[in-house]
Each structure stands twice: as structure tokens, then as C-alpha cells.
Image (cartoon, rainbow, N blue to C red; front, side, top):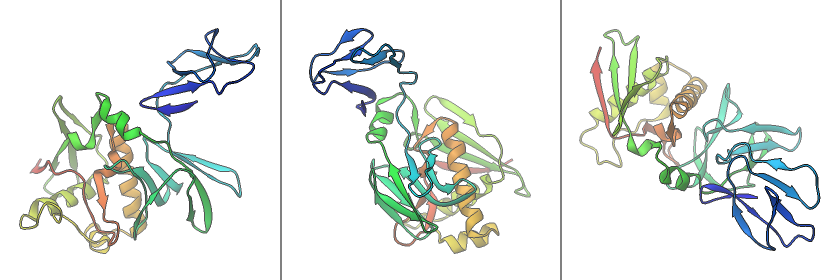
Length: 260
């Protein structure tokens, strides 16, 4: 059973005892796209297995030494934990899985091993998720813009997501100030080319926000999670990071800033 072209596919591998879906025996080598609620049985087993959720698989990682297992939230996998986000694994706009650290970004694949705090983690990464997003009617990051409004003292920031079907506002959070700063840097950098516009070093951004690097990573993680929970797929790209320099910038080009 595997995830393929936006659905779970069951294939009979020429089994002698037979593979059944809702009581129908598959032909040897037959492939069937499953739907939620269908029951799979192997051979003469009296007990079948129902597909309870037809949604796509989530990326995850396991630590062989302890058996610890981490699953992604909204397709963003954070290691070793969300309270200490040292490595973030997500699918970029080109459909590649990448492992993002403070100092670099590496392209990774299913079953790759990455070391976090001296401990190896084995990645379990599905394929074709971005193609599934693009084929569906849901929102992707590339289709949205942002409208930010800040109070005079900048203690309160409102973030509104703008898309073709309308708008919706994110629940206020302190880390929205990070988004405000990145948006301003992007809008003020008018002389740069689109590829060079709005980039800022991690150290400079930490100084602007008056936070430590770990707090910055934590805020980025929380921002990505909030946007993903709001229904925007590919939300990890809301804060982009350059592979070599580690520079950061806002991940959308349609952005405006106003006052409350």
C-alpha cells in the first residue's frame, strides 16, 4: 500500500492467499485506488483493516537508539522538538524535501539520516505531496498575500491573509512582529532585484527583534505552524532561508503594511 498521485494505492503482489477489498479479491498484480471506509483483508483472515483517513501521509523521523518517533505538524517536521527547533524539515516550492538549520539548508530524501544534538534520526518522507496540493482546491503559499497592520507602539500586529476567494485574519500572536519586520525590510529594499530583495542576516534580525537565535527559530516555527493550521499549504516557506548564508526574508511578495 502506498501514496501515489493523491490517493492510497493497494497492490496485490501476486499473493497466493489473495488480497480483498470489501470482499472482492484482487487479480494478481492488480492496483486499486482506495477510498475512505474500504476494508482490506489478506487471505482468509477474518479481520480486515479499514482505511479511516484517506489523507496523505505526514513526514516523520525516528531515533533508532531510543525508538523515539516524531511526526510533522502541517507537513513541517521539527527536531528534536518544537520547544527546541534545531532542524526543520519541509517540502520546498520545487517539491524537494529540505532540512533547514541556522547555518545551512540541505536537500534530504526518504531514509536519510540526520544528526541532531549528536543523535541520529532516520527520516521517513513521503513523495508527491506538493503535486497533491497543487491539484487540490486548497490554498498554497504561492497563491496568498499578506496585509499587516501595526499599532503606533507596535505592541499589537494584525495579520490578514489575502487570497482570490477573500481574506481571513490570523489570531494575534507576539511572533507576528517578526513577520512585520521582515515585511518592512522587503518593502524598503526597492532597489534590489526580486531575487535579492529583503534578505537579512540572522544576527541582524536577532538584533532588530532583541531576541536570541533560539528564540528566533522558535518564533519562525510557531509562525509556520499557525499559518499551516489556518489552511495554507506550504506554510513553511513563509520565512525563507538562503542555503549558504542563512539569510532570511519574508516568503511572499504580495505584502502591504499599514497602521492600526
